[in-house]
Every structure is written in structure tokens, then in C-alpha cells.
Length: 117
Image 1: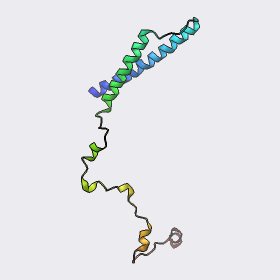
Image 2: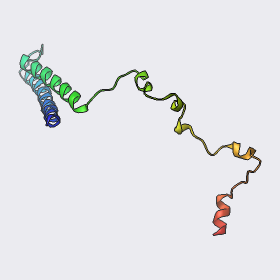
Image 3: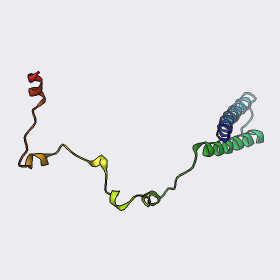
């Protein structure tokens, strides 16, 4: 229930923010047509923009869930010492160390395997 309410707040906040931007553009257009000088936006447009911005920020923070800590050390505290140097993305199985083994037998090339069929 709370998650859907927060999503509705985000949607309504974005619509309100878009409406305030459109109102500001309309106000500038009105001032150009009437040949008046632009000084500031009307207070109601500014208040609507600020309130809708805070509503969107609050809703997004609640929809996103729990935030994690920024320091990397906070996550490293949960990892055991034995697994810290275990980096599977750096595993390499196709290297020249095989050729140095005394019982190394080179595999057939792709062209030789195609000729066997």
C-alpha cells in the first residue's frame, strides 16, 4: 500500500512540475505579447515548482528503498579473509602455461576438425 502511494506521489509530483514549467513558459509568452519586461515569475508558479520538486524527491527516495552506505569498507567487512582474493572475472584457462607442461598434447585446430566430419 505504501509503495503504491509513493508511486502516485511521484507521478503527481512530476505532473505538477511539468505544469509549473509550462506555466512559466506561458507567463514569459504573455509578457512578450504585451511588451512587458520580465522581472520574476509569479509567486504561485515558484511555490508550485518547489513543492512539486520536494514531492518528487521524497517519493523517489521512498520508492527506491533502503540506501546503502557509500564507503566500500562497509561491504568489505562482511567478506571473509579467505575469499577476498577470489576474483572469478580474472580467471584465465587459455594461456601459454599449458605448453610448458611435460604431458601437453596440442588440440586439433578448427580446420582439422571440420575435415574430419
